[in-house]
Length: 445
Image (cartoon, rainbow, N blue to C red; front, side, top):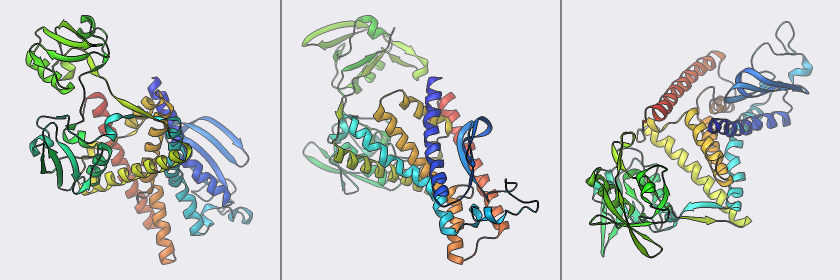
């Protein structure tokens, strides 16, 4: 429940920022704002300040700013439906097309600008980053049956280029992979003293980086967490222990553990661990967990090596701007690849996923909260700029037509376009909710 409340609050911040953009530019342009609402549906809270009614409504999945001249039946209209002369100049519909465009564009612009303001704060207070991201992209493990395994990757391979883009770090390799998603990939790898070229064509999206194609980073067999009540904890294993052998099988990396444990099945095994330079042995009998694909488990998690980085003011601004641009690029690439059919629509998430992500981040540290806010804000801003009627991008398209042809689209054409746009959005929402439900209740990918 706490996760849901925290997620809704974070989503509310993004909606508020978006609507605040419309509101501020409308006010600066002299347009009368009738309502400023967070949410849709029945009013929960309402307060009249000046000429504007401020509301919080029951359905927290959006918001709106209603201006004079948008829709019929507004206060101030005469019996004939016309605005009096003193109000007409403050009507949104009677503003020049350039001013209307600025008001419409201000909402998405605020969402796109927000990360440039909050991410520097995250870098200023300090962020925890996986240590391997700044290291050379060497394969610690290649998942059996993955596209990387089928392409011939082996544990220990060091990736030096993707489609001739140099990859000195995991971050650079992920960025190159994302940029070439949907296209044939050619990895230049170093194996021992030999340099090889391995072609690869991912069947699905590679937007999650090297891990999504089956290449995992090196991971030492050091225990970072223990599940309460599971065999490892009950046997006496402690956080920080390094597993060096299971029975007669030596353990070189974390990825050896699953293979050896599954081969042994549910039989008790002697686990040899190293603790502060001392070798200790424990007998552990794995248990079968049907919820984890009927795997045998002992209840351990790896120690995730991270690096804490705190930036100075200038470096924080630079890093925040670079990360903001990366997130914008990632979102644009995702949309481009999805339209081209290179990315499965299963990757589309709806409000449930958004609330989950935001809620989980809201219960961590400030840097994580700001990072997730930035990511979601960019997605909201770009989504609203798509040229789909009823979205801001659709209204901007209508204004662009008016600027070019010196006349607005006919009322009938706009009505049809709005109906088509509404249908598209409804279909997208149905798909997003379906994906959310599959992930949440049925374990869909």
